[in-house]
Length: 351
Image (cartoon, rainbow, N blue to C red; front, side, top):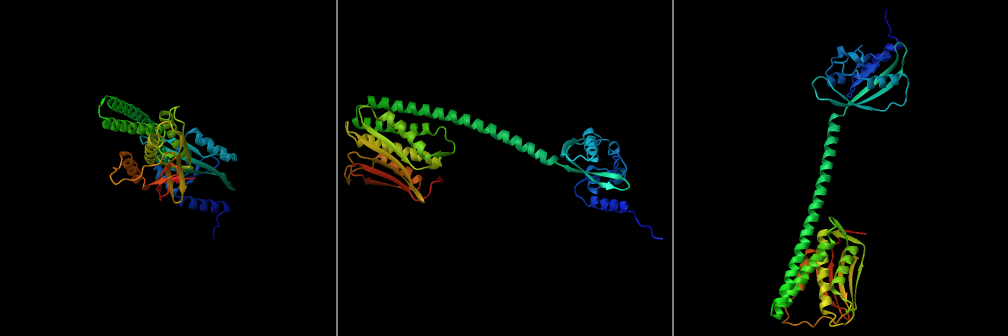
């Protein structure tokens, strides 16, 4: 005579088979919160032999480490049919081993005709991921501390650089007043002006650690140059016309030094005595590249001479232009002069 298993026993056998194939540790509880079956992955993960799980309560599992109130409340809520059971994260301590961080999920299954409602507990060990999260958080905090320290050090360095440039400029100006040679005096004054131009560029880059907006940067720089070099007795206007673009701080330094050199040169030579005039600094995009220009409506450049030497200012501008991958051109503006620095490569960012 063949005995046919009840529908309940067939369902339970299927549940056991499915649970045992799970890589995620699983426990199936009956309505008395006794373990009906445990997955092999549970036994392996928590070192509890299979014959020490079936029929056991939470108090009897392992060394009692599973008998904590929150887990019992989760299981009882599921048995009562509660639908609002969120995953619960907790630490599990067993013996002398380090605590393990677990994510617990419970779900009520359809009633078994013989056993009543069943509850499935799934367990995910998130110890390593939480440790990694903690390490990442610690590294982020350390990064923030390093960035703050870097900002403080950079500010201190910039302050010292500014002071040093002011001292050098003052020494050069003092020396220019004491030398007897007019040629030496002019050289010292030129050196003074170039130190001040570096100081002006450095001042307007203090707040920029990464990318620099070209328009606001050149506007502030030229405003500083105008206020320091254009006196009330000299009716000269200095304007900036720049298209929207950003460059790296390193490239901004080169652009600033070029503009400073060319503006100072125009103020010195394009408008003798009290002649009025207009200087325009422009930055234009022409895909794929850009052009920086300084144009004045002054007396114009003197005619080229075979014996004329290349001035220090011209050499400085050409060297800076090479750093930017650009070429320098001197044009007749009729009246005045227009010096252009043209690059055929695009700036790092433009919009």
